[in-house]
Each structure stands twice: as C-alpha cells, then as structure tokens.
Image (cartoon, rainbow, N blue to C red; front, side, top):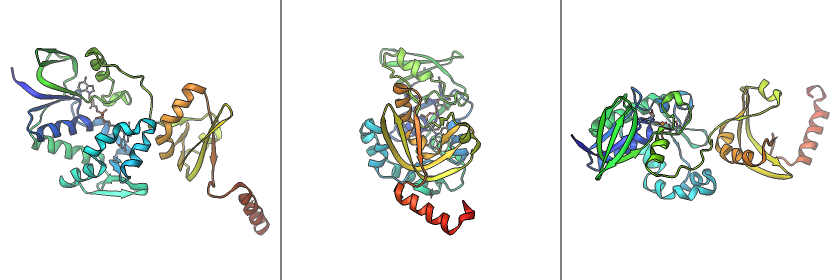
Length: 293
Ligand SMILES: Cc1cc2nc3c(=O)[nH]c(=O)nc-3n(C[C@H](O)[C@H](O)[C@H](O)COP(=O)(O)OP(=O)(O)OC[C@H]3O[C@@H](n4cnc5c(N)ncnc54)[C@H](O)[C@@H]3O)c2cc1C
C-alpha cells in the first residue's frame, strides 16, 4: 500500500495551504476532507465575501493576539499578510482594500478564494480525498495509519492535523482534531471563544439592531476597575453588540467574564471630545437650535 510523505487532515484554508506548501517542497501529499467539498467554512466568511487579511504591520497583528502575540512572530515572518496577498495575486485573484486595511477578493466572493485553492491543489498534484472523515490514527514503526469512519485506510510518514476549531459545526469543524491530538498524547488547553459578538441584557440595544456607531470609545468596568478598549466601530444587533472592535477584543472580554461574571460596557459616543467641552457644545447647540433637541 502506498505511503504518502504527508497526510493533511481537513481541507479548510489551513489544511489546503499546508498541503500546497508540502507539495511545493516536493513531497507526496494527500489531503483528507470529511465534507464533499473543500473550504466550506471559508466560503461562508464575511457574508460570503471573505475578509482575506489586513494590510496592518506585523506588530499590529501580534498585538491583536494579546499577551501571547509574540508566539506568532516566527510563523508570521515565514508567511506574512503580504505573502498571502501575493499568493492569491500570483494565481490571478485580484484583491481590493477596504476601510481599515481590510482585504477582500475583488470578486466580492469567498468562493473565488476557494476556487484558487482548488486550482493550486490540483496544479501541485495534491491527492484530495473528500467524504473521508478521519476516525482514528496510530503510528506503527515510522508510519501513521489513518482510518476513516467508513473503514478506508491511508498511510503517511507525517500527519498535519488542520481540522479547525469547534464553531459552526455544520461546516465540518466539530473538534475531531482535538480528540485525535489528545489520543496521540498532546495536551489540549482549555478552549475559549474569540472573534465573537457579545450578548447584552438591555433591550434598547436590541431595538437599535443594524445601527453602526463609528469610532466610539468603549470601557469595561468590573469590581471598581476600569479597562479602556481601543476605539473602533460598534454594531448594535438584535441580541447585543458586534462589529470589528467587539470581535477583536472579545477574547479579552470573555476572559474577564470568566473571572468576574457579567460586566458593564460603557460607550463613549464622542471619545475625541472631553466631557466638559461636550457639555458646552451641546449647550451652545441647544441655544442656537432649540427645536432640534
Ligand atoms: C461566520 C464566519 C465568518 C468568518 N469570517 C472571516 C473572515 O472574514 N476572515 C477571516 O480571516 N476569518 C473569518 N472567519 C474565521 C475563518 O473561517 C476560520 O478562521 C478558518 O476557516 C479556519 O480555517 P481552518 O482551516 O483552521 O479550519 P476550518 O475552516 O474549520 O476547516 C477545517 C476542515 O477540517 C475538516 N475536518 C474536520 N474534522 C475532520 C475529520 N475528522 N476528518 C477529515 N476532515 C475533517 C472540516 O470539514 C473542515 O473542512 C469566519 C468564521 C465564521 C464562522
């Protein structure tokens, strides 16, 4: 039975890129995907538009990961946001930059991103097996034996687990890789949400669903302490708050909630204007246009 150099489990963006890199280094690569298609979650991202990356500098990227950001320095210096953009441009997918350096495919379709991955996998002769859900793997004298839920078998010298996280399970990311890694003896850290919107109890927020507040200041308060979040755009939704600033900072906020329970979120609609100056401005405005108030 054939022994592949590398078996990659999971054909999301991580698995596809890993398989492509392996093949480009001359390895014989097999990519195993449990869905009948590659990149299903990817095809749904950013309202099916796919916010591919950002033009920010490496330091800004690292900062977004909080205290552990520097862990990613090595990986990002081997493959940066610029490398990613070049990869897609080289494969004939033009990109466009929107507000705050956000990069999208010019087609505005996440499917175009998936199609590039499909094309390059094919060009690099990566063997793709879809409808293959890895159930079990073990290592017998330097060779990994991978078995699917249907009893198919694959052999490989190296295995890359790229089975994604545990959200939007219908896309295939059900956390299988974590169980498999644990079985192989890896430690699995506690799983915590990140990049998530937040629930707010106050109903008036829900009633303002769809409203975006631009460049607001946000402050979290708990047990007499005050934590200022970076300024940014806030989106009010039918259940609470979302938008770039909340998605970016949610891992910090969720961490605080685990320790302190529910938190208070304060919104400063005009953070660039001091409170006393704002009072004077409003008073002047009221005197000039009394009916407007
Ligand atoms: C609604 C939404 C919007 C998003 N928008 C953006 C965005 O605009 N920009 C951005 O950068 N990120 C966005 N993300 C996050 C992005 O989708 C993920 O970071 C990305 O998909 C993770 O890639 P991955 O390859 O690690 O995992 P996944 O994309 O989850 O892929 C894992 C793959 O592994 C397969 N798999 C799982 N278990 C097995 C098994 N046992 N055997 C075989 N295959 C298996 C799964 O079927 C899946 O195809 C968004 C996510 C969501 C949910």
